[in-house]
Image 1 (spheres, rainbow, N blue to C red):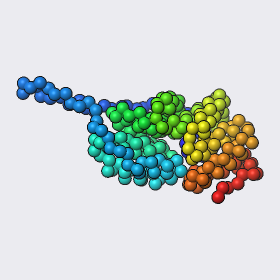
Image 2 (image 1 turned 180 degrees about the horizontal axis):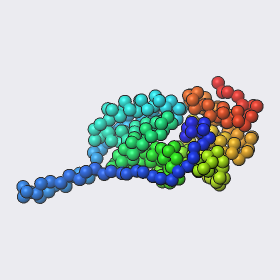
Image 3 (image 1 turned 180 degrees about the vertical axis):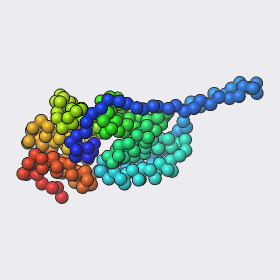
Image 4 (image 1 turned 90 degrees about the vertical axis):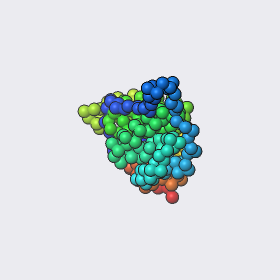
Length: 271
């Protein structure tokens, strides 16, 4: 989500620029008089996912973004065969999710390629993660409405990344609560309630470190709804869970900022 809440929050937009490409169709030369043979439509069975993928995903959630970008790039360099399209697409999605935290534009080609490969594979798990990555890219480049639509479609898939999708959906809604002309003013307060519901869904279904990010989002909502006690409660829970999950200081900055804004006298840094 992740450090976008430091700026609290970027302005929305409404555009989607995405194409899904299909494998080229190969035809045979009929001049030989032979009947053309049908070319296999799909890809061969895919290799097992390398263990590095799960490690990169956990490091992404912990906020080690630069290392994840570099690690995913290196991993993808060795995933070039037709039996490694799935692993490459998952690595591209994770790299895009990490890249969007630094320079959102860097995530675009990665997410678009992941979506295209996921569709070639017809692999629901890969499709879900790829579309979440592309959707949050759209949110970060001020295309929050389009990003919301794509993330909602990803959540509807029966993959394992539903809680992550809810986390990103919360950010998409939160961005749309603000005005276009005045980015610091809440003009659509109903979107705060939508964001709160999405963060709560992430909180209910996610791992501990995903729950930390969800608490962070709920603290931000509480800030805009002038609920001081909720700011302090969620900021403290985010801090506690981030520390338990070995999150980076970079990620822990947001709950601390929210606690400071909320004048949370009882807020304590976890050890």
